[in-house]
Every structure is written in C-alpha cells, then in structure tokens.
Length: 158
Image 1: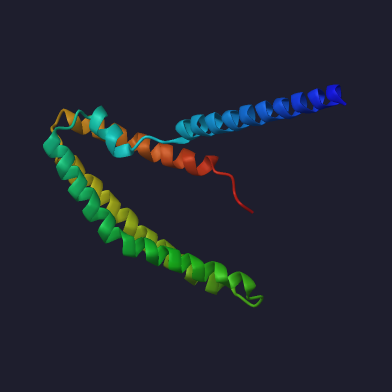
Image 2: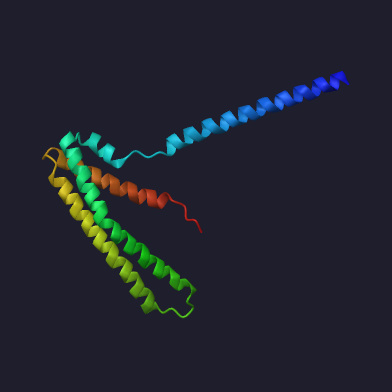
C-alpha cells in the first residue's frame, strides 16, 4: 500500500508540474503573439519618418481630430446604406435597378468621404516644409498600399 501511495503522490506532483508548465507556456505565448500582432501607430511612424517638430505634431493632431469628427457621420451613413443594401438579400423580387440605386447611394457617401480625406491630406501636406513634403507624399502612398494589402490579406468570415 505504501508504494502505491508514493506512486500516486508522484503522479499528482508530475501532473501539477505539467499544468503549471502549460499555463506558463500559454501565457508567454499570448504575450509574444500580442506583441507581434500589434501594429505601430501610423501617426507615430509619420512623426519619426518626417522628423516632425512638436508644433507640427500638435497641428497634425488637431487636423486629424477635426477630420475624424467631421467624417464620423459620413461613415455612419455608409454603414447604414450598406445595411439597407444587404438587407435586400431576403427580398426574392429585388430588381437590378433597385440594387443599382442602393449601390449608388453607398458610392455617393464613399465618394464624399474620399474627397474629404483627400482635402485633409492636402491640408496636412501644406503644414510641412518643402524638404518634408516629398517624404509625406511617399508616406501617404505607402499607407495607401498598406491599407490595400491589409484588406486583401483579411480572410472573409463567411
């Protein structure tokens, strides 16, 4: 009996050690994964790449906040238009002209957002020195390419 108790105690201790090791492994794995998946803040990258002054950084923050505040209702409108568009899925009698009308509504809102974003970037560009402007132009192009790549890399959630 005594030797079976020793075996049982040893088994419990081994299982306890294995559980602790597994918890440590899972916890360290999550933090490493979180660090890898954390994307850098585009504004911070821009500040560094363009060597922006403190004043330019403050001005950028104000312009960015203003832009997002004025754009939020537009994004809400696009979202509502898309919700209405995709709600048509359940209508078995929906016509192509109805789909086109709903699709055009989405396009119109998106067009307004794109034009405002373009104007926002033009205002930002004007706050830079002539030496910084080509770097800004390049930065914007990289950001647009990155956004396109990020969108293409996402897997659909059927």
